[in-house]
Amino acid sequence: MDTTISFEVNGELKTVTTHPSRPLLDVLREDLGLTGTKYGCGEGQCRACTVLLEGKAVAACVTQIATVENKKVRTIEGLAGGDTLHPVQQAFLDGAGSQCGYCTPGMVMELVAVLNASPNPAEAEVLARLGRHLCRCCNYPNLKRSIRLSLRR
Ligand code: FES
Ligand code: FES
Image (cartoon, rainbow, N blue to C red):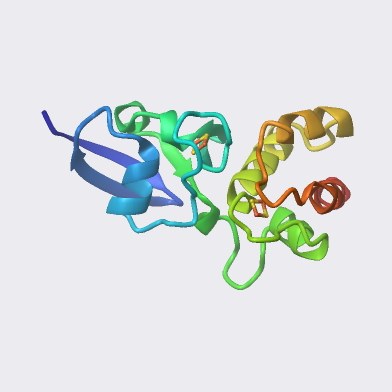
């Protein structure tokens, strides 16, 4: 049975009426038009769908919408400040971290979560966290360069 759920997305209060077990990813993309968050595997494995939930990185494809009630979600659309990219987005641009770009929003959001939790994380730890993300273009050398650039900003 459908239920009504309110939550904050990129600083705006949103209310949806939907089945409580529906994935957050589907609600973001289909109901709210926030298509920057990508669908990859739908099973919590590729991390293309990573968003921030209360500041922590989660796979939106395996996050049921009922669990975000009254919580704060941030997607790639909510990262830049007007025309100014977030430093992690800028680092991905400077480091050519995007090839087709499909994996990029998830990687950027994961890195933002890592840096939110610890401003000076060990590089090995960061690379291990980002290693959970699949890039079907195999753009890994440029991704590593972009991640390293992010850590210097
Ligand atoms: S689409 Fe969510 S982890 Fe792959
Ligand atoms: S840049 Fe294409 S999937 Fe990563």
